[in-house]
Length: 328
Image (cartoon, rainbow, N blue to C red; front, side, top):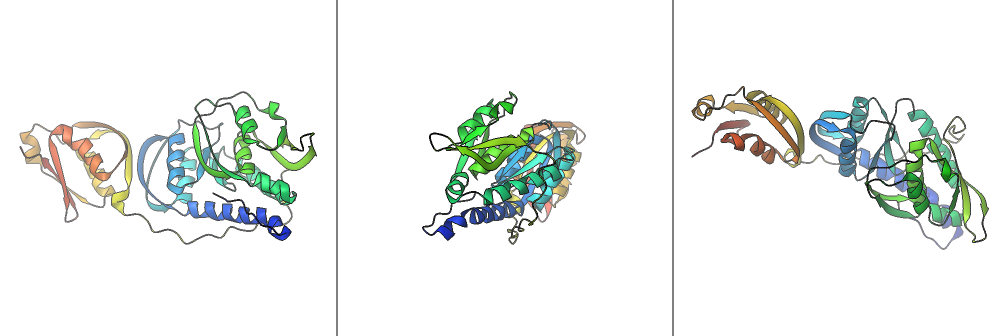
């Protein structure tokens, strides 16, 4: 998401972190303004976060202390990603924290503490030498397989630096992930925040191999925001919402056929026209219970999935969703 700045002049190198940070803030702000069009029923929190992250091309991380299987239902029609994330977090009894480069859904009450820790982190990064800034702002994509151990992830990601306190991380296994490009500092603290710790970006010393060393410290009362406030990221103009036909739908439902079709018709901004006589010729009762499980389906595929097994056909025109027996 951010790109490392390279310059021959010292002033350009000193400004590197500020430029990278501004780009990270702008990228996240732009992602949070992305319009979301979706209809989900009973989608697990982790899957909801992953799908919303793909919509905005931003990493959306669910804190390990939250139940990833919490079921989330929502309807969004062009709402900004920031608003949709807030609704998802509320449904999971959680809250949202915005970092430089990614977004976290965290347990209630942790938001202010983590936001203060992020402000302290950015202040520390600004105080690093130009050479260290180039190291910690180096941007790379990051992915790992199912069952990865967080201590191993941090150790492998800490390329070019040493970390003291890795043994403080408890043994755990993370679900697989594939994240957009992030700066080294963001990649490390993305994982560490799961355990209420972070890297204190103040070098302890350099070892014999001239590798700088940093300590892993607690996130807590010491992480008060610095005296100088962090500049607010510029909020870009919202992007144009995609056409309704481009929306996808995820449903897990057991409901009477007529009720389900009426709900979908309203969602599509249409009026339902159900040909009961033709349904009767097939022995289809409008009150028949339809059990449906479909993911990321277009409007057309969703209707086909519901109606084709019953021998029914659909047509959309003149603001109406017409359903009748399929022609023989």
